Image 1 (cartoon, rainbow, N blue to C red):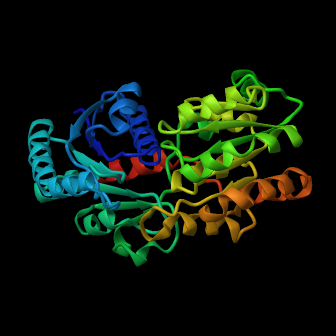
Image 2: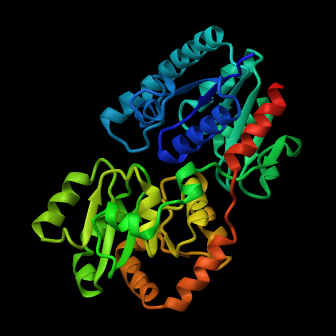
Length: 370
């Protein structure tokens, strides 16, 4: 009998790509499996999931708007109605699809999907990516059959008997890293004789990192460094225009979103990144020296906790978001000129790599439904 699996979550690449990795691993295990995603309308998953070959249903769910404005107050007043509608839609989807299991990876859609599934008696599995559990997963934990985690000590948040240590699932192309530095250089039209720095502010971009990069043109020329810069959607046009206006095309390659992240990692000598859980899992597998700039706009400051797990092992260096503009480039210059430190960091971060997380999660799915 065909396995039927619902995977819910999204909002950012940090939730979407692990979800797709789990789906791919399930399809590899059970080629005839039926897999349906549930996401949030208007969010990134509604584009990325179909591009990966999977069906997705969108809910009208949204997050709380924290910045005060008339528009945001109106949006927040609409939230209870969106939540009620989302729960009703999930109930209908579950009745029609009749999944063997519902998997939650975090993001707006996870809460109504997992809560409704549990209330209707469907098996559920949670995948918690961070070292500090999110509020939604803490609420849902009591209903879940199994909770897959990537950090030790998660019994602070979840029932110990439900926890399975799997690591975080990452994209297969990054886990395998078959692409060579030469291929990466050719793909991004770079000069192999110069140092290459990959700058990624997460799939949606990061304002502080983007502003730092707008001030990096002199640094790039002085230090003969090339940047691969993922800006995110909101900053792309400004960044591309600034690079063109200042004749920096040979030094800075601007991308709204990098689809071949495996080749970007392969080309890079050093990476500047946010400290989301999936980004860190990828960076450990890639094994490159990294400057982490944790986002301050996350629950319980969990990105700083993620970053410090590497910093304490000598596997990364960290710059606070508020100091990004003044501290990041000087620190990058020191790192570029210290080959021994780069080697030490490469060895330390590679030692933390965990492979096969998606397959380990599918092992747990199999245990539950078989």
